[in-house]
Length: 445
Image 1 (cartoon, rainbow, N blue to C red):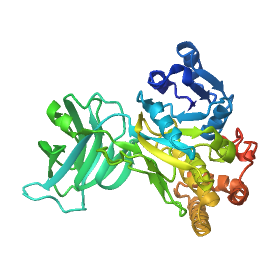
Image 2: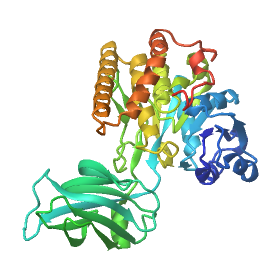
Image 3: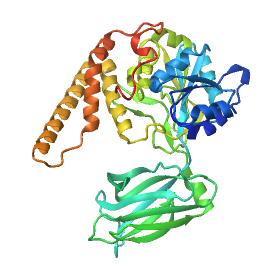
Image 4: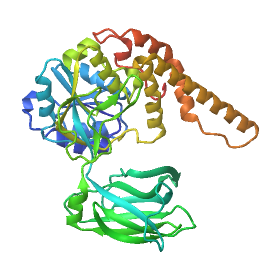
């Protein structure tokens, strides 16, 4: 089952992969919950995929509410949730079910989630012009405007080492790099030559630089860089690409503790088998997870107050607290665009990630961690608001704290109910208010 909101651009590739599973067709059904899309998603589904069960929400219920609606529209022993911006491998579902069937105490099973394409391991080593040695370690050396492989339209550059800061110029991130930096650059194919395009400039006008460009362990060029942006195209042979291209991990289970410290296990690591064992994990990512029906009947569905992000961690935590096991399996694999709907780094993404982290802490974190996080947040918002008011009185530009003010408004609205939820869960029959098909949405968030 997948939840879709204006994801028409992903649906054909996604559904083609799901309909090609090596699982008996009579034993599974593909369902898509559409959250009132306006981009022609429903028309595409009806015309090109009539075999897919379409559940129309009528309005945007978010990921949490959409999942609850889809779960209640099915009656199977298991419900497999998978994002519409993914491409699954043929054995994706079979591997999930096999792990769930191995132990009746397993309530959730998660997959190894990789980013959409392979990535080139690219290194940038800077030398001061006329010097035989590297630039000062840790000091700003390069400003990176862009790094891409020509012909690959997956915009997911990752700085794996040497990243010092980032700023926005003309709507794009400009990254400040140390003298030694490693990048992961998306590439369409791992078995073909590639043209690497870099746009860089020196971080200081006082020093011209020579930059050695590495692909894997092979130096493919050494170029001169000044404080004026320069676009460089470099060729990497098929042999070099084959050695340097690797899959990049998005999620191999989720880490979380009572202090609210969390993260995707393995994120931005090259996949060299380090997460190739089935393992119990604290939480699982909703981008690809198998849910046992009896577990859902016991603990209820997703908390719709989250709308999107952290609802999977919330469900995982409640399941573990109720005695269910959560297992990650590397044998179920898929590729993920990541933040395909919300846009990573967008104000929408920032709002829900920051707000929902506080939601989770209030519901499940230690009392000390929850109180500290909420207090620090309100103090920070108050100080920012006062500074903005003073700036307006002086007719000067003030700090932009729109997202934080929106979070404060939403947090204040939901705070009493979240505190109650800390001590009292909803009824297990699914009739609990916050696990029903919710009435939350962007307008009320």
